[in-house]
Image (cartoon, rainbow, N blue to C red):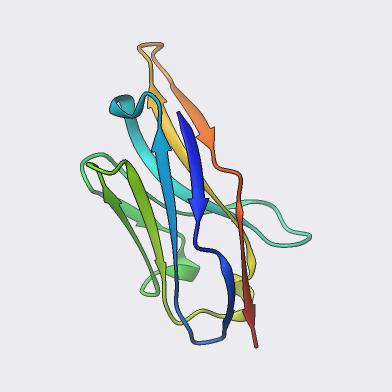
Length: 119
């Protein structure tokens, strides 16, 4: 599975931004898709994820502000980010967990997209 992200950029605090992640390849075996982020000098953290059934989970710091959705027909996952804060500044990475009959998922990563929130 290959993942291509788009939608990053510069936004003022309080603003909104939507990231997209388009998957190609063996997409029919994808189970979970989601987003991580990594701020300068910090470890990569899970932002949230969505299962093939549509269940979502989020890190506490983005609950109520970020929404993950998935268009199965387009093999695309979205991260809608509202009420952005300076501390949301990071490189955002899309991922997909795919089952190839190995008994465990294989994780694919996008190239990352920069989100910068100005205070």
